[in-house]
Length: 346
Ligand code: ADP
Image (cartoon, rainbow, N blue to C red; front, side):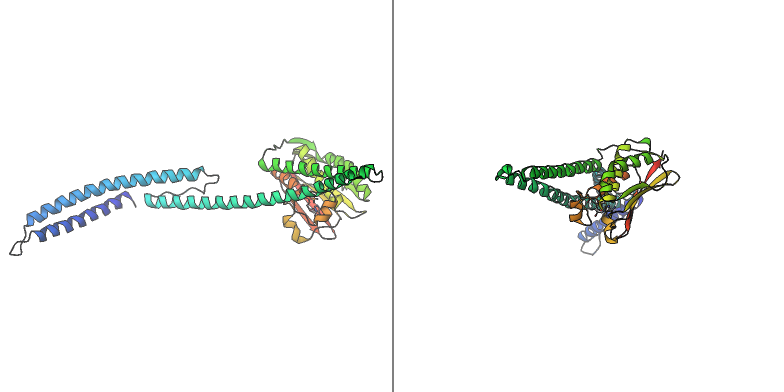
């Protein structure tokens, strides 16, 4: 309500009060002839009009001062939250401004509660997944140690073998913990991207050479689609190596025997697209939207058998997003999979 209309309302109220009061006085002062003193009615009208107007003006100033204070408090509270809702268009009506502030504040609180609920679900799921992943190698180690303690230590046919298996389970635990550490560093923003100019074609070749033994064991050929020539990008070399290792190792893990993995580069102007394709087992369409979630696996037992933690693609996505770039996947079950991501040209 504008100041002008508020004052008009106060005047009207004071007028009505004065009218009622002077009418009452007029009736009270009626003489035996049924007449009353018009001066007295006029004076009582004026006095009651002026006094009620003063009283109303005082209350008005006091009340609206308090409303404005309340408005400032609510606005401060709202702006302190993580993601305050967009700005409010204030009008000259304090009450409607206060109402808008309270509605925006309640909306922010509701969103915040929803966000916290989601986080809580994620935290519970995450803890459940972590303990589930760690349980298997821990129980394995316990099993081997108990068997060795129960006399297996003196049995040369199993003692060394069981110790080697226990060692393998320890390795698995270390892999899970390393991946968890990477995920937590990437999610808390602790991990800073340190961009540098480097030749990604050379890096791909380097990763392929390192994975050649694993690939050859399955008869898989790792190669560059085109002849090796420099492709410069501006990115965090160490982190991009981690991305390439994950994608190339996956292409072998989920590749068919005697298959092949090819890496191609495409010049997109400001960016370079890096494409890793395989002709392996592929992924059913229904799994694709969730593939980059932590611990998401298409075939849990196959992944574990291959030493997977289900965290690789989540880490890959975090790293690419930390570079403000994107990663995509296309796949057909039984035919093969193509992962492609972009990087800034160097
Ligand atoms: P994992 O440790 O299980 O390999 P990732 O996060 O690297 O975890 O991958 C998640 C899941 O995506 C894998 O369990 C697998 O089912 C599927 N996947 C990843 N890469 C490929 C690929 N090249 N071909 C087929 N399936 C794949």
